Image (cartoon, rainbow, N blue to C red; front, side):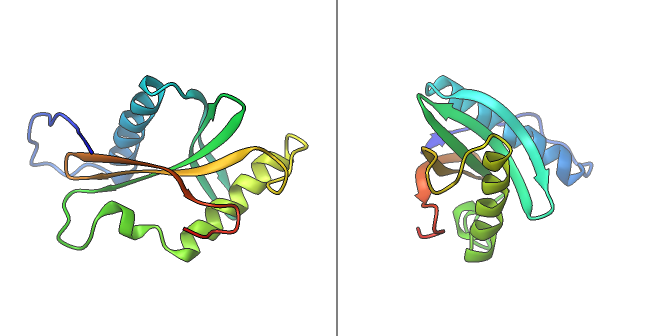
Length: 133
């Protein structure tokens, strides 16, 4: 696991979308440094949202970014349940179909980049196109 440098402490509340955007930017930089190419972020469909879409060579990589301030109620990876995986699969399928591709035939994978506190964990191929871990 990598460590994320902490910034100055703030006592004011920050909107959850601002926090999400911050950690998605951290995730994007980490993945780009690891050789992935950024394609898109925050693609929304009725069925779900795709946090990051990257490319690893000829592989489409759909990345779910999860953040938890601490592990008191479980780690960030614990929040990727079956229902969440199904929403991600549906959104990825819609995004691919807009490009005349199919989730069944396209070369793609589903990664999770989980941040708990200041610990970053990248899980390539966290689940498959059937939603299985």
